[in-house]
Length: 317
Image (tube, rainbow, N blue to C red; front, top):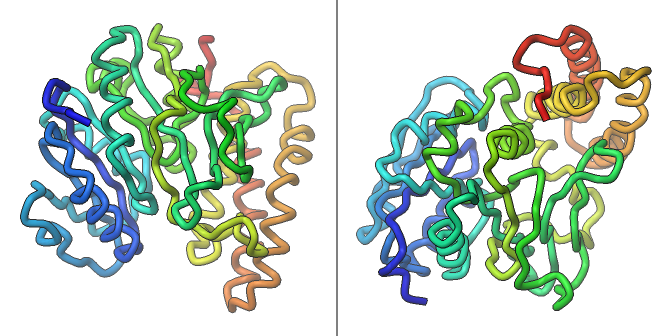
């Protein structure tokens, strides 16, 4: 794939305590060798820092080390402010790439001036025949997102299409102009930011799409292992609390005027809180009680936060 006629782009990678996965991601970028890649910006709030700028002699890697935990939204905003290119590719550290990851999404941006962000579909890194998700439109009731193709074998029915979506997980490419227009990532949602960003872009007349002919590869456990769904949360108790709080806060944005919101939020969130709790209990970790307490704390914090609707939470679409 000749990317020489495509615009230059920056990569922004937020990372926290996952240097093994980060190294694999950087090595995969080096292997794919996109000729239009200008720089890689790693925003690192890990507890113990490592020097990742020296991992590659052929890539321009700049590391911004943060001494305190800032979570994903703020890390990505720092990346936006540091990026020198008008096209920015955000990649979570637990992914790997190939040539298609960059070529097709950036080509779509170049050829479609109304597209603000493009999401490459996600396959499992450990089995590239298995889909993590093709696209992420809202469910019909808007209480969460459809995960098209999730945990199924790859399907020609879904592939090589552009699909309108409402969330941007794992990795996506965006125009810096569009990001600045919506104020970047909303730091009131430290983790659950990709769905709010998608809605903000669409509110400002940008299209947000998944391209199911380009792929990124999620470096996580396959769904054959019990408890795979809680892999990220088990080693990171504070993330558990914030993720649940953010989800409820975001649902309040989407369902601002819905009656009995708190009751519905509790019922809907039980679909992931209960499985996660079971995974925590059976993990054998000493932190399992702490993890469950953080779940409860996040649920309560989210309900309290969403009870009072500040201006930034008022939906305009």
